[in-house]
Length: 117
Length: 115
Image 1 (cartoon, chains in turn red, purple):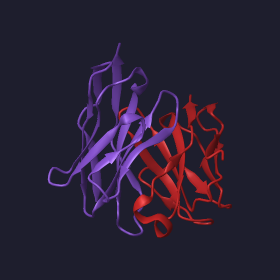
Image 2: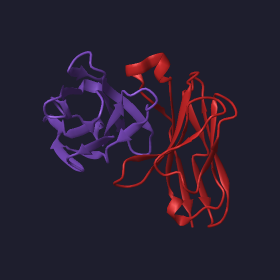
Image 3: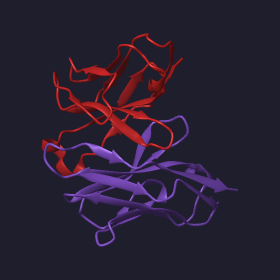
Image 4: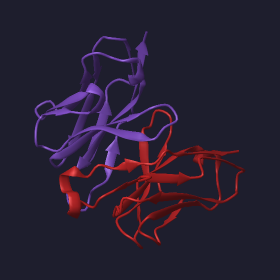
C-alpha cells in the first residue's frame, strides 16, 4: 500500500497563477482533508470531504477550492495564488465516524511545499 | 468547541535523559486525543492515541502518554531520549460528537536532543 500520496512535492508560483494539488489514497477511506502548515501555527484545516462528491469548508478556506470526483482522490485548487498562500500543504485521509468511531485517526501524506513569489 | 495548548514550543534534553512534552486540552465532549510526530521535511506519523479504553497509552518508539481528565492534560513522555527522537510533536484532539470528526492541532513542540 502506498498510503496517502501527494503531487507535486515542490512548486514555485508567481502571484496570480493557478495550480492544482493532487492527493490520492489507496486505503478506501471515506474522509479526506487538506491542511496547511505554517511556522508556529500547527496544522490548519482548509477543506475536507466526508465522501465522494461532497466537500466542506474548514478553518481557512478562502482562496482555495476542492473537488472529490473519485473516492480515492481529493484535489486542492488555487485559482489566483497570493504570497500569503506560501506554505506546506498536507493531505490526510481517515475512515468515517460511522465505521471507526473512537479510532478515527488520520493518515497523512508527505506534503507539498508551495512558494508564491 | 475544542482546543489544544502545547505548553512548550521548544524542549531540549540530553540523550539518555527523560522527555516530557506537555499538552492541555478542552472539549465539550469526551475527547479522543492523539500525539503525532513530524521529522524534518516529512509528513505526520501517529505516535499514539487515547480513546477512553485506558488512561495510560503506550505508543511507538518507547513513548507513552497519560490522560488525566481532572487536569485536562495528555502529556507525552519517554524514559530515555534518543538522537532519532529529534522532531516536532503535535498534540491533537478530536471531539466525539457525531458529524464533527475534525481534528484540532496544537501549535507543536520542537524536541532537540543534545548529544
